[in-house]
Image 1: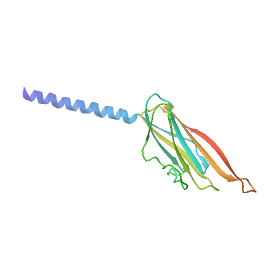
Image 2: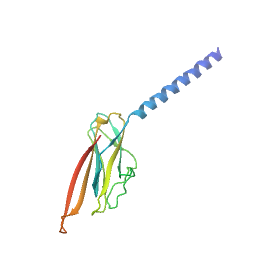
Image 3: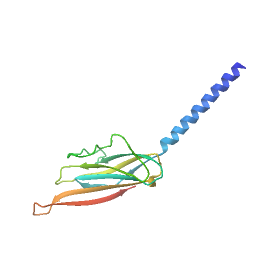
Image 4: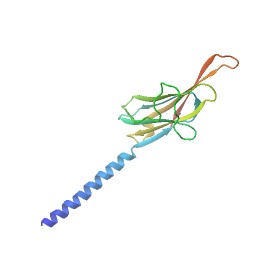
Length: 152
């Protein structure tokens, strides 16, 4: 009888460990990555809004056309990529702000947003706002152009 109890205990542990592994695998799948189109400029603001009804973890990076994280050249600028994901409650927004030396040629980049806690990309709204400071042709007067694109 003692042996039968040991067998049942062993089988119970195996079943329980399989259940724990499957639950962890399901949580790993609750993840989505969104990208914006590329823009050119000297000041990049990548932002995301949590429009779901649950807390999400959001990590940002602004990448160059080669897929490598851009390194800001002007301070203050946020770290790129974010050192750890932001905890973002429902209906809240988080962003990173990167600045580069102005003047031609502008930097080209796009935003990559990694979201944990959902596998539905419609739970997050992502956009990239880019500014480009440049002189009016034939003068030393500087103007700032702005463009915004959304990510999916």
